[in-house]
Length: 163
Image 1: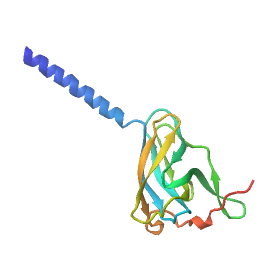
Image 2 (image 1 turned 180 degrees about the vertical axis):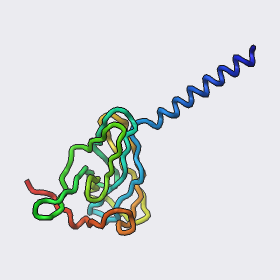
Image 3 (image 1 turned 30 degrees about the vertical axis):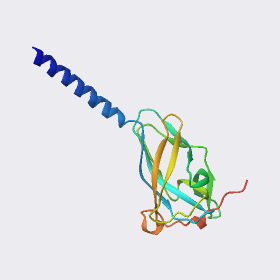
Image 4 (image 1 turned 120 degrees about the horizontal axis):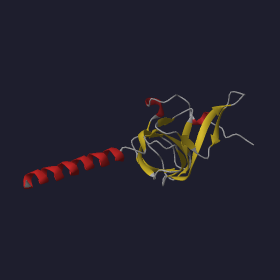
């Protein structure tokens, strides 16, 4: 009888642990972060995949990093004159159980006023701030944009729209 109780308690414990492990996979995850190489005092951009595993919509409402004076959520769009503009965004909507790609030519995170050179092979931290989810701190590798799976859009093509 004692062995049966131990067996049952062990089984209950293991099942509850499995449930907890599954819940850890809920919420927001990031995948495949990378940034463009750039020089001190200049700008760079960060790209990644956001995946909302939860049944609640969320939003990326800000970012921060110790390698830049400021960060900004931007959206690249081509205007009527064919010029690519970076339009600052207050947030990036993250629907329930959905993925949003933060990529060249679309949403991206600008690193403005770099405090140091970002060389290929370097890594730095970027913190993502969400409306509902806890912050996520990513380790971002610096890659050569030409060797990444990104588009060939150069940072020099970007302009900030004038009001």
